[in-house]
Image (cartoon, rainbow over all chains, first blue to last red; front, side, top):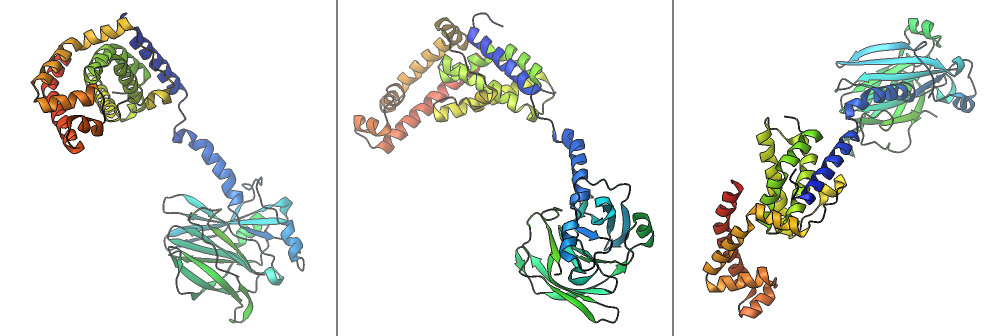
Length: 254
Length: 180
């Protein structure tokens, strides 16, 4: 360093010190945060992505109380009891409905897991249902980019569910139409493994576009209407498609 | 070649005096040149990830390119914005009189000033007066126009032509001194 340029020397030394300090303090790169992020997401995704909470046991005639008893699962440790109650490949998309018991066995939580276009498993929230009374059918929608998954559970007498679907283009709703989803029983092995009620039936419908549904009609095996759910208002659609928490609308059939 | 803090610190130390002289030849002001160099150092550190060269010579060339960019901003705004230095938390030191003279000596300022005086004298009288009033006396174009009895647009044109002629004459000399 030239001795006759002390200001330049000092400037150079100050910059060097600041550069080293800045390098030491640089924020971690995004991929360094990935493992803890993945753990955090996994911890959140399984319980909080679950929107289908089934109350089990003798919950007849206690719809409101049954709702109160449903525990929304943060903190639940499902792996030992989680069982796949249905697996399907729909239009090339693998979908799994998984259930596990929580709340000391009084509650069953069900999650829809689909593989998104980016090979990321997304968890859709489902819903809960008591098997009897006005709350016998509950369905919900999960939006992935360009896809809509409608899923839920119904009582044992429900053979099919008619849904009034309202397609969307951007933020505009298009002409509605009715479509039918056949219900199906739970996988009996899962019922045994998970200690689940055997008389519930699953509803799963895939739409290859973004849509919402406004009405659901439960029919028995003969096609007779058992009950109808009219969902008030136009559902607000989140712009964050695919987000398991923001893009899911719970529909109750009360 | 990866430019980390160690590599850059070594490069700044080795190239600092030449870079300071380089900047002084373009600012005609040693203090301003020191600000330019400091800002160039800090900017180089901020942009180190964008450097795609493989050799030290390329890194030095890249550093000079950054210095030219800082100089061009300085010419446009008539001051050196010390944004990158401020982000790095460095305050440029104040230069002493001896050091200022040393910088002028390193930059070959005496030769440059003589060249500027020579080229200024060689300008047509109308341009010379306009340049002197604008650059030396720092008059606004309106005042300059009023002083010379011309329109502001004409004043701008005369100053612009005069400065372009001076730049054309001085640039080869600056480059010759850079190459020494």
